[in-house]
Length: 226
Ligand SMILES: O=C(O)COP(=O)(O)O
Ligand SMILES: [Mg+2]
Image (cartoon, rainbow, N blue to C red; front, side):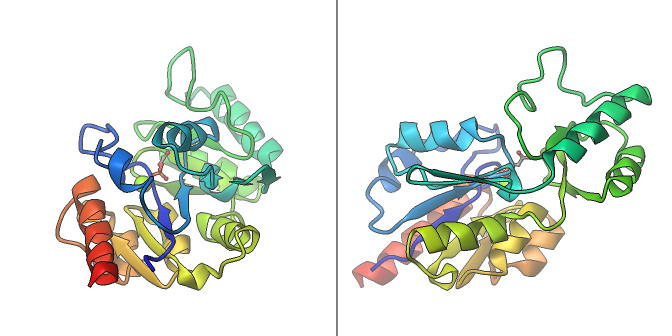
């Protein structure tokens, strides 16, 4: 059997121009084991991605803040405090950086995300005053509860799927994937991954972005076929 998968979205299922690699639309629906999409993005994004890929909606969103399996939704973390951090950051004269219509945070429930061109120092200070932490995904700074992570999310998903997290193979590209890498059987960082993800991964693949992820999936498939 091919192993169950836990896949990050940005930097992992995407090409360098941020588009989803269209090859996943053929590869993933045919994968004969559960697939979990684990992302720092707000909940609607991975739900929509699963919908359009036509795969079951096994989702970890907001870096573990929201978990969906079948019809069960679990929320984790102190969203209120994260929203207070955002308010205080703005009151101090900084911006979240997403423009007037902030679609990055509009649907967030358990954490907030800030553009990486905004100052990190004051954001980290406010986060720690509220007992929160900042994670840099390479796409955004995320202000979140420290006990909440994709790895914790995967443990919850695995349980609901009647699986062990150690059956899973993970692919990711950044520090918000390190917790996932810590609970799975095999972990792969794509070549564009940040140093934290590369250090935590069992294997760093030669290819970048979706090219790297697809090479891992094809290798797993060959292992299964052979
Ligand atoms: O939204 C982000 O900042 C990163 O998203 P990802 O976890 O899917 O890479
Ligand atoms: Mg990523």
